[in-house]
Image 1 (cartoon, one colour):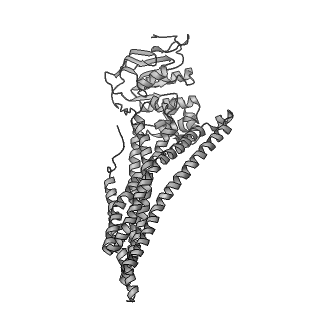
Image 2: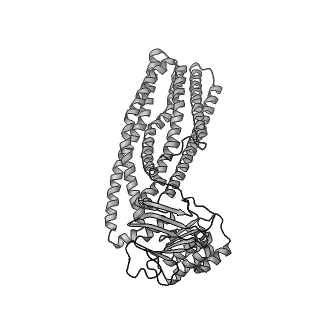
Image 3: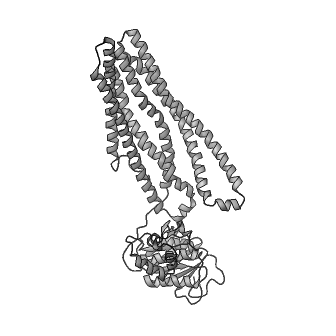
Length: 523
């Protein structure tokens, strides 16, 4: 189902109305300026003295026309930004509700491009495209009406010429769609490839790939250049058509004025009005290109919205639940199990990470049911996975990520000390010390402990720890057990091998090493 915002929602209808009002005002002022121009030339022809009133009207009209165009573009920008903001929020909400496996199956650069290139195209159409279309709907008919009021004879001469060029614009404009699609595809291909390669540029260089990557970049750049030049030629030609049309319409007006003996003042007024028409006609010439870009962006975003998505809304209250798994299918395993409230289930085996992601709600099971005290809705859950959930920022932010209310600094320091990361605070600028995205500036053990310390602050009801890929030591195991003991959460913890002496049951999944299962009950 489409998640595109309504074009007229959230106050956007008011902005469209304001743009329409400015269009009506522009049309009215264009008419006033045309009649004032006629009066000035009439005064010059009859030597009636300085036409102060007509000149003043011309000057004021010019000022107000400029001001109205500034207002119209301001309203248009606000309209486009408002729509882009709403779509950006919808996209992120949809991403947040998608399963990790679906997100990981798509190119990360392509997903990021939705927030940059596609939103730019959307903003360009909704803001500039629709706004200019609305303005033209009022300005063009108003200008033609003024021309007929000024001189029906001259209007009959100019109108067919301008209409002919409008028809030519309509015929040539659809040819832009193919070019726009190719242009967006070429730009997107380069942007996606480079965004994904820059992060591993040094490793690619070590593998001897730099020259090959540069050659590929040059080839794609040359292709993009050719498409962009062709696109620019068509756009420039389309923008030139209104100027040619207005110019020929001016010639037709002068010819009719000479043939029919139309007063020079009326001819001057008509020419002034035609000059005012150039800008809205030129705006019309670019509408189709913006619309084509919008269509491409919309199709890309619709493909995202077609993916299943459901936000996880955990219950914030309640006790640690009993977790019931009934015929839950994960990889090649089918799991039926009861995990008592407040107990630990140790999980080992090759499919353990997939199983934990399903229990945590990060991924979806291919079949089966998961219940928490008989309910489908999860209680407060913390998932500690192999990729640290850490955003770039301060240690304070890393420790409190996702918390509704930030604890006092002293509490953060106490928890950091309890879970072995106080040295990160003491080594730098305290809690204001910086941490890189995904904890890249930390050792694997420190990143793991930082997430465990955060879990202690959150106090979840369900605790899911995938330590299978972490540097698991006896100290880290004690850290996990201490966290479960402190929170009282029902916990599922995955480690490569379960040593003897650990309290709790063992669930062995997928491929097993002979020494993986050494204690407890396996299944």
